[in-house]
Length: 161
Image (cartoon, rainbow, N blue to C red; front, side, top):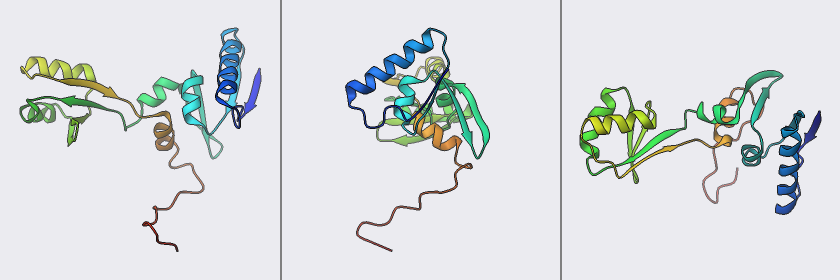
């Protein structure tokens, strides 16, 4: 078993790649590797399984993919010349739909179901893509009730208190 705390802090990109390769290689040999890190983007690239502890309690014990997929910040992005006609179909199936500059942002239905509905209703899709939350966003959502200190609302530019 290997236990590391912030193993990539201060390393250059080559050093980060080296440590990532070393840890994955040791894990592939069947060894248990525990890594504590605040660098969520690095953990997303390195870890297959995550354990999240907050205030001394186990919050999550899942694969990295499962943890990210469980975030409410994931959605399906759709671009369609028939977007207006598609809206009532989606909302009728219980989806929440908002329009953004790229088209429709859909939550409550997965990508496959959105595609099936479009096909069933003759809706042309120019884009149908799943958008997952980042590991950082999923982690922040998961641990929001387990932090001792929170960031205050950002100050307006040039205002000091």
